[in-house]
Image (cartoon, rainbow, N blue to C red):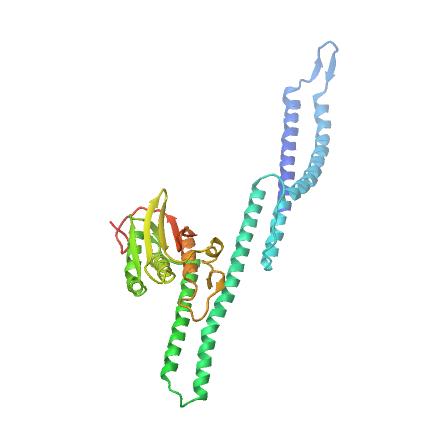
Length: 363
């Protein structure tokens, strides 16, 4: 049976039960409380209780039949009215199942359980639509970026095949560079997918220790480019994946070193705690950046408002991975231009108390 029919039968059954109880109460009154015989009042009259009971029984049957018809009709209409919002939600679900995610219920009326369900469903559709659009755009960009090194490799091999006498040393080096770029891009895509799916184990992690390790790892690169890296701050306990949070910090410090002034550049890595939050901040010197440009830096395969080129270092996923890891840890990422030039990146994560001992846990 449908929900509407079940509700109709429930309403009708309740009305019938109430009617039977009411009739039974009247019958009990006739049998036990209504006197039989002469009643002396200002106008004496005779009460024949047996006659009243005999005439009341068929009348009660007619009333119960009327109540049954009324309960069924009224229950059917009332159930339909009550289930109308659920019908609209069901129709929207069927539309979404066909792949059309732009449809919204927008249920009118007062706020009740159905209105809250419809609003929650609309919110879910909006988030799902945005997520699917982002995934499609990311897949298109990833396909384009992966196709580029493969096309270069194919071109190099075609040239080598047409000229067998050509020295292979230069070809081997170029193939190695292109292959390394393809591997780097693939690993970055896998890391980004892992962060977005939140498929990782969590532990208590001190971001100050993670920042020190990332800075120490990238110190040779900083010295090569003439950039100084300074780390400071108190213990900043977060709860998440040690490997992903180390990758997040490494990406930030690496970007700060690479995108810096040609001479005497500087990078500052600090950690601090706020009420309920820990903050990792990475700042660097560099060119003055416009706010609209900064807003696009965390987009995949983007450097500012332009797509990356194949001759540039990196794969254009550094800040995109940082953003994805931050969101996977229920945090927020803030990018802002520095007044003196360069960029300031702040990662805010929920705070956790340091307990136990691990590579990134003080105790």
